[in-house]
Length: 318
Image 1 (cartoon, helix red, strand yellow):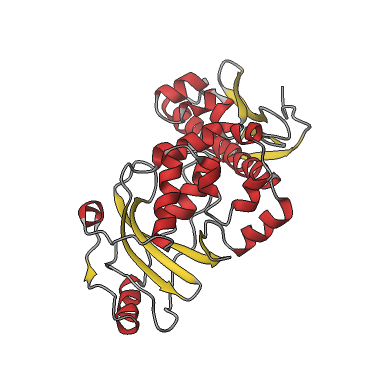
Image 2 (tube, rainbow, N blue to C red; image 1 turned 120 degrees about the vertical axis):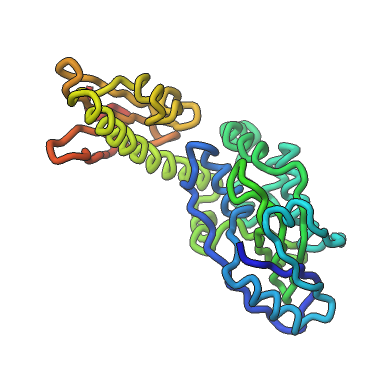
């Protein structure tokens, strides 16, 4: 992890900030579900800047109030200095965002980000449909979010805070980008392309996103089943295993047994006394948790290929 500066104060000229793009929304879906991935990994896990030291140096030149740089490894991130958070500042917005998430005030938290248009049209009942996803992110937020720095450059800002890059990881320094909108600071949880999609889809955005992510993960789950079956068959005279055995061996996660977190119903069917098999993934609620159905069939050439299409919520093979 590179060294970051402890940054504070407005700069006289715009600061050149280079950051990694937000992590993909599908990362670690087996550990935290879709909305948790969207909020936690695109905000908290926006990525450590590869040019953090360069940024700190630029800030020092442009701002007389910038504090000295400090080493922000995981130990320093969890126990290092804090800045004084001023009312109405970017740092206060970041602190409020994570506090509201932790307190399960989800609508209020999302209103502090540029995901706001996607949540405004959702009724309380509709928002509760994402309860599992939202609770996952609430659990992932650390009890104490340590805010170590802030840079303000005109209508843009960057806040540095000690946060895990994913659920359960050690806190590291993360950079959170904000912009000023109508006099208030807003966290940039989505990039420009995503913002355009949100503007177009409105409250349907989260539903469509959930479908996109869960379809992608359904395909990945079957690909994992394919590798698991290949590994099992090589050790068991060419025979294949039932789903319970693959879970017991640690080849596939037990998420495959429930559609609550995956949105899909999975089936592994053994054929010819276990000498062959096929596997299917079918949306648990067609049009809500997924549209495409997927099929895995073994091939003589090694790893099998997963195929998928919209089959009106029915399995591709019975």
